[in-house]
Amino acid sequence: MKRKINILAGDTALWVIFILMSVISLVAVYSTIGFTAINDYHTTPRSMFIRHLEFVAGSFFVIILLSRVNYRFYSKLSMYGYIISLILVIIVAIMQTRWIRIPGLFSFQPSELAKIMLMIFLARNIAINRERLDESSTFWILLATIVLVCAFVVGENLSTALLMFVASYILLFFGNVNRSMWWRGFFIFLALGVVAFAIIYFFGDKMDLFRSTTWGHRLQAWLHPNPEELNQENMARMAVARGGFTGNGIGTTIHGRLMTQAHNDFIYSIIIEEVGMLGAIVIFLLYALFYFRCIRIAHACKGLFGSLSVAGIGTVIFLQALINMSVAVGVLPVTGQTLPFISYGGSSYLFLAGGVAVIQSVAIDNKKQRQQAQQQTTPIAVSPEESTLPNNDMLNPENEKI
Image (cartoon, rainbow, N blue to C red; front, top):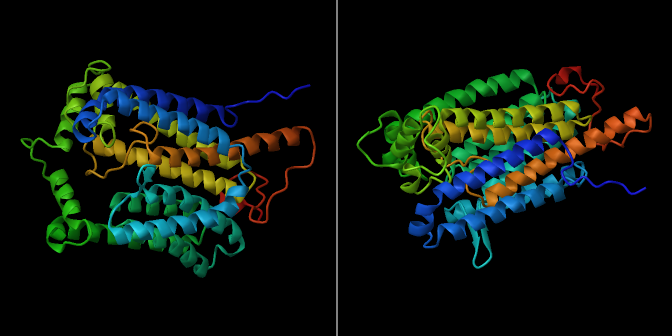
């Protein structure tokens, strides 16, 4: 009897969410791409939309292909991925740019690759050192792993560096590192963040350090907006105000045809303009449900590496979505973070799709484990880097038998 091949294997709910986001993305990008296509890229909106469609289709291919790989393989791969990512972010830091461009072929932001690789590599290191997590030396080693990458990203991309650091630090908590050290570090980093915020706000335009002038102007514009200035932030706020609760209808945006980043950083505000806060709430719930499903998958995984990889990647995607949505409605200053799987596609779209593939790989393995348990057969072997969780409780690591 031939075995039925399930193309969309893994967690069904995640697939439904991803498909819905892809549909929303295609509609929203088609509605907002015109100004950028004509004025910035000197091409037609149709050409840019087709390009975006290719990235969306490519993301499905990436997830379907990479999710078939046993997630334990990514534990070994993450070490090389981390090293490659570190080398690439060092190169762009020296070049004082965000992009690596290969003329005639493609361009990408190494920080987007590092964002996913850091989560997987950190999960691997926590799993390997699971018997020494109470030691302060282990905490410092794991923290150094995080800081080493973020330090080379922060100069040209502050928001991405902060996103990576916060998601990684949350992952340390999930991994049950020394709680005393973790909380001590939390309050120290919080204090440093407040001090850095004040310095950038008052002296950012005078320091001429990295992109401090841009950071300072963004903070000042956020805290003291000039309603008469025609900039991206004000147009985004006007789009939100115009949308109201029910919106003006798909394809009726006014501000989306005047903004250079309507298809990227501010796509959420244009969605609100067209479908209102009601549609915005639906999108937020999609991301919340996405994160909830990630936690469920991590909770069910028998391996510590798999659990933490899913939790880390899910945290990165959810936090990035929260940041983008907060910027769009004026809660946070402009950051440049895109809305995952909805903003205009590119290397970021594909790298995040690779992260979803790892999550789905763990989900596929979870189903195999359940089926084998039901058939009372020998479970799939767990690698040396894994720990067995008899109660499948990732969020209560102190109950683990390691």
